[in-house]
Length: 125
Image (tube, rainbow, N blue to C red; front, side):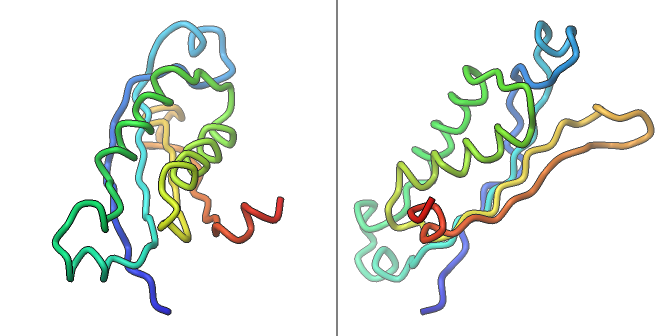
């Protein structure tokens, strides 16, 4: 079955992320983009939020985690955000998550990591 894509674009949240002493104290912008694969046809037929992936609920959970998590590595944060999507919404079958730190490298607009995870692989681990 073909899945549809729900996009969360350019979610910008201040948070603690990094290994340098100043990064452990001073919040910086953390930029998140997510693609959530799910079947949106049931919601398109019923026009009922109970049949839809509630991207507002997911986004609020991502924001809360970024604000409270304070991981050292982008690698950890990006995986944790994927895990939140799978935990909150059983209709999500695949997630592509990108986490960036704008301005973290001199001469680069941003640096980040993008990962793709499938629900089946998450269940096997």
